Length: 337
Image (cartoon, rainbow, N blue to C red):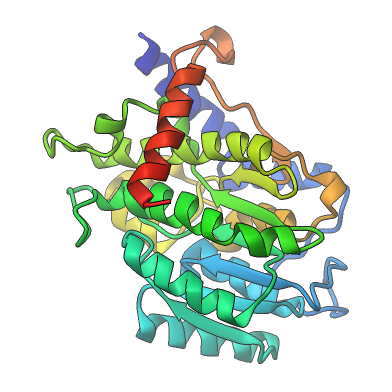
């Protein structure tokens, strides 16, 4: 009953809020200016008034989709940008395109697969050798796989890339640099798919048994984990702003690969920039406008649960405190911190 209700109500919620129609409705309520493309430079016609000169912005999964839009926005606003990517060739191509579009030559590439914990640790050491502070970390890397994949370290790749390596380990290793900023913030790019589930037991979330793999739920578990992580790190590291956010139903290569023909049920889908725009606002808005620990869509905190009658929260997708503590303890131990 709980699963059926949460999934059905998320789809209804998504039709109202996550499509392009929802986005166009939401921006009518914006207080701050909004621009129509990521690459509009400071002071150019149609710009939103943001200036990120002097800021250090780190974006994972920055060579395509929402991540590339966010990287482009940061570069257009004058930030020093670090693109954390897995593929050197794709990263270089994206970097050149972003530099040409924004006239920003302060763009650097660091290579790591976020699902490989050893690579994440090595890459962070490289970044720390270059920068004493990080103003904004956007944890965006990862993908939805329909078949089970495993990292070289033996971890299920969806969980490892989205949550364990690409969100928890990365943000914890960079915590000194985030605290060194007078406005450090971390954005976990989650998904509305997390509405379908609570965070399950560790063995289920990590698919430790290697049986009955469901790519959609592996993804949803990791995304629910990111929402919980933002809540908990707000308590343990309040000097930094921690938020989770999702782009709505945006048309990206990752969505096309994961959903195929089923993507038609998400129409009318947002453009990639329409999906990224609210997250770009989280990167740049005044700190006083952010509510740390919240789950955002289009510049506004959203409910985190839709599993009760008549779109109420319900209990089905809520975790008990001891379950959240187990998740945090396991993340710390398994990531080697």
